[in-house]
Length: 251
Image 1 (tube, rainbow, N blue to C red):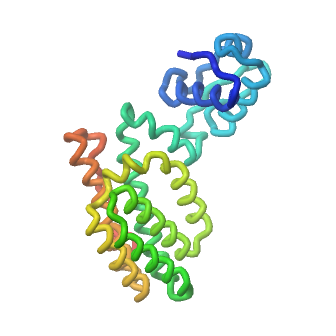
Image 2: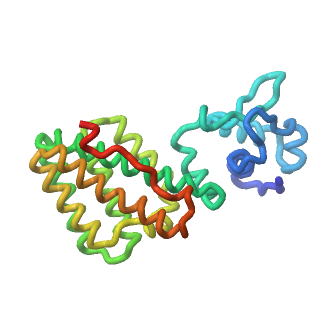
Image 3: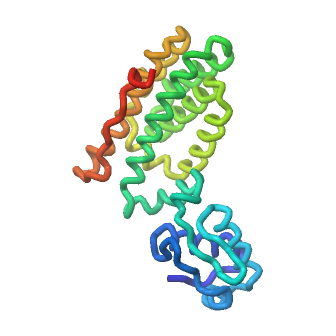
């Protein structure tokens, strides 16, 4: 289960190994990691590097370190944060529902961002100009990955237009979490022409301050990705999108 660690990036490599084992279920919630002496011997690292790695895991909400109790694994669904997404995605082969949940989150979050932005965009002409620039860039790129990156930047700009600082910070965190998996997610994006049309349609709704239209346009577009994931999964039920309330139901 564990393998020796090279000298460089010692604490990071220790944390990566233990994190993968915890997220993969080899150490279930409530269980204890082996004692420090045993772990350091099996990993061939010193105790200082091991303790640094365990602190990283504790910061992620994966373990709890208590004097006299050792290092106990936590239920990360109760103690972890959004940053764990980037570590869970490599395990998506064994947890395909994570892809479904990520796309579902994207749909709900993007829909509400669009609604907020429509209500507030008229006070931010520079923000609207940034969206138009991104839409122009989208017209110029050809590859699916490049267009997906433009589309992500487009929704970051929509988040900024929403005027909600927490939402901006959250989308920044999600962007960092999924950056390494953009090639995979780009394959689940809508066709290029649909992406480009969506950008123009949403900008028009934002410029007009049409909250209902903005929510509907974003929802219709982001639903495509979830439906595509369900289709390319070969019918796996864990990847089929679940019904969501319509934008009108949230007004």
